[in-house]
Image 1 (cartoon, protein in one colour):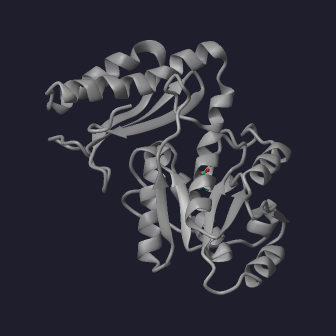
Image 2 (cartoon, helix red, strand yellow; image 1 turned 30 degrees about the horizontal axis):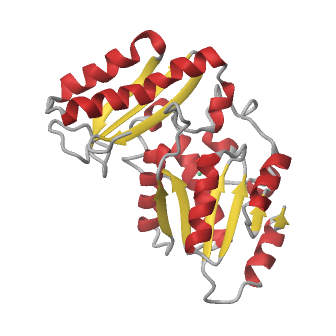
Length: 280
Ligand code: PAF
């Protein structure tokens, strides 16, 4: 596994890859868990070479968010990636990514403004900018991302399409703990009592899916079931039933309609989503 600290090292490594070799890319902010490793496995299964980036991107965090406390363990991440047979790991410094005088930002309008974008202004501008920079450097054929960040995937698909980038974004299934909690680096903030309360997100999804299977088609009734299931275990940031392409609220539901939510467990903000027709 080759460790690449600088953009120069990354460019040199990329230039040495024979034309026609399929390259997969998994962008991450590190503190890897089984969700990330499932993306690595998907890349390795589909592509001849796999790049992973580890970079906690400051521009996607708001001023009062958890940039400083975001969990980091580079040594452990590198060990895991090496065990998984990753070919290249890029872990740049912020001076390398946003040098003095940095001025350029990528804005995907519309879809970036709703849901997480409304609660975290500027978040998707930061995500789109860093992912465009990374894609430009790695030049992958395919990029693998988790669908826990369902809105992020749609924002980035829109960006890739609009900027004519020939990168296939593969959205991979959410990986969950045995108890249903969607895996996230931020789960490490939860103590065991908070972890128990955090199960309200997946429980809400299960309850709504069960009601949908039993014939409930009323959007207010389905949202009420979700809200009641969350109850006082968490504080809802948003909870919506949306269409899976534009993430606009729906008035009639089908199998593909998505329950999507962000819920605070004390100060920890967790997200989750699923289609009504799925079964957790
Ligand atoms: O999903 C993440 O971990 C981040 O938003 C990403 C895509 C690595 C960009 O910093």
